[in-house]
Amino acid sequence: MPEYEPKILAFLCNWCSYAGADLAGVSRFQYPPNVRIVRVMCSGRISPRFVLKSFQEGADGVLIAGCHPGDCHYSKGNYYTRRRLTVLGKLLEHVGVDPRRFKVKWISASEGGKFADVIKEMTENVKGLGPQRSFKRVDDDE
Image (cartoon, rainbow, N blue to C red):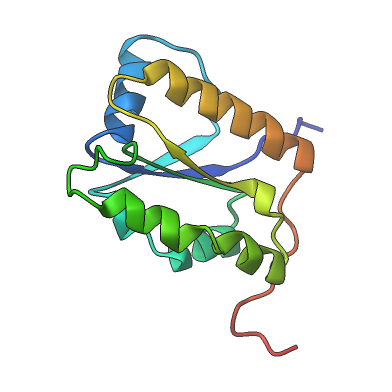
């Protein structure tokens, strides 16, 4: 039986985190191939519903990465992200998802090494938790 490999979905802002991921690739930094990247214009555009839907559709882990606070291309997008997603941990617990499966990180365009390290760390952490099996739909009655 093959070893379990987690499926991780990463939402990366176009201006910093996606550029950091690109730098990691160009620099040939090694990191696990478990991540699937979705490029968004700003981390501030990520709705908690995207995270919930990702888990519902089979993701074992979700990463949201954006510009460092104060460096957002759109001025305040990452502040909205930070505010909006701080309460998501409690919601994830409520629907049966271990909040350790979800991370928000600030990665700039010049931090390709940090991007690779974040993916390595997240892959190992999620692999240790095992496959995501329990998920209650938000609209399910209790």
